[in-house]
Image (tube, rainbow, N blue to C red; front, side, top):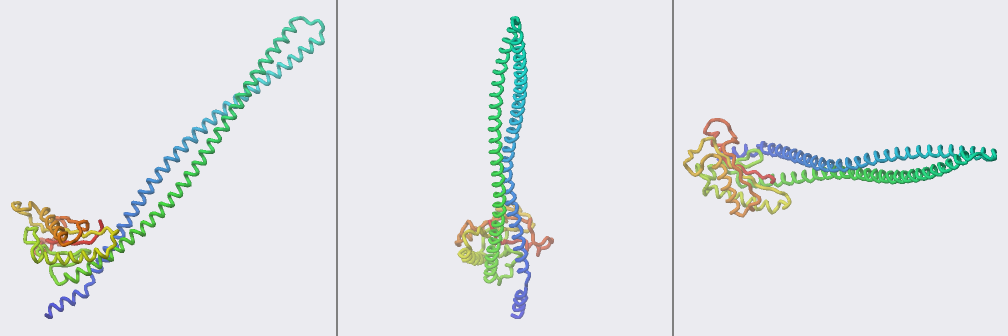
Length: 343
């Protein structure tokens, strides 16, 4: 009795599980924050990519319209130059006509050649006036086209400014969404950690009297001998008693955890490194560890635990607690681990 009391006293001052719980909680929080950061970066890059395509398309249209405007301005300048030349020619023709008419008036009885020359100049002057009028019409048309192009460019610039403003607003919304998502995920982590601590506390109360059931880090560990005969995945009578206690604790915990928290109990099967003979039901340690984890999950479902809250995983011999090549190490490595986590 004195020896048992001394053992309980030593367990009462063991701070190691609490330290491990705190460390695992910190690691989970860091992992969630990293996941949120990656998600926010993905959403931001996708949003910016779409905005960049719109901006590129608008800039391309503006460049095309700018080139077209430059071409129209060049054509307008050419037409104006031609008009100036025509006006100069018209002025010269009028001056020549005036000069000849003056000579005709001064020289009575001038010959027919002078008269014919005046008639030619009059016809040429009329032709120049007609060409000048056509040039004026072309200049007016070009001016109208330039004005229309300027309106289009102004409209595109306004659309580009609106798009940039929306882009800035989208970036602000994404940043705000990232902050709110960080807060929500941090709250989820805190809530799950609180319920995990409560769940572990209950399991400590109902299972702490078993020496072959212990806490390792953030999980409960059952030695395989507690639940299964050697090389078997059939839960023995003593193991069924322990699993019934576990099922009752899970059912009570489910009533307290909000339904929006995606929690699950992961059941991990582990074996030692002694190879299977291959002649029995299981070909290797992979199949044995998976079969045992599945057997625990099925028993818990039969005991009333919802199937969507359970996960079975087999690790074979490849996640040992003790790597020593001793019988004690192999005994420790044959185990079933229970961990309350998220999907």
